Image (cartoon, rainbow, N blue to C red; front, side, top):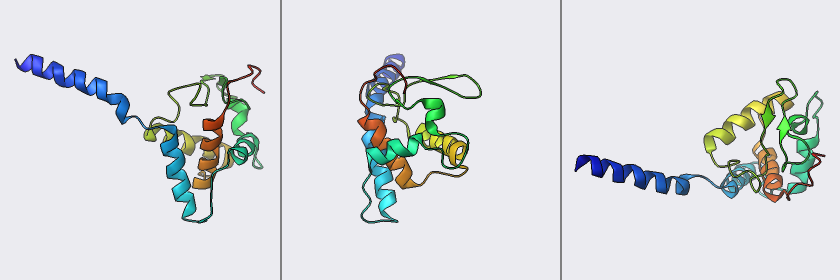
Length: 141
């Protein structure tokens, strides 16, 4: 009986797990709210996010150096050559689903591209752009 009860608990947890996953819109709302702490009128902009993603910010790389200018296609890390899955959550259902992963990758990649952490406003703009990304034309440009 204990084995059956344990199996039921495990299956119930597996079925409920997708409900625990965060949604891309959750991250957008969180970053927008944080950015409004510095500027009450802040509203995320997909266009600003796209421009920011493609800019080099005075350094050698932009986000698009590895991720491409089209978030609906796979990229390749400039140094390691490792394939990078598409960034757009509408194309890649794994994107923007875990606070741990979103925090890790913004922290790591912002340091590489900017030499510092990204601001909440920068994160909100990029997330807005990734959410708005249309299906790819396939050229990565």
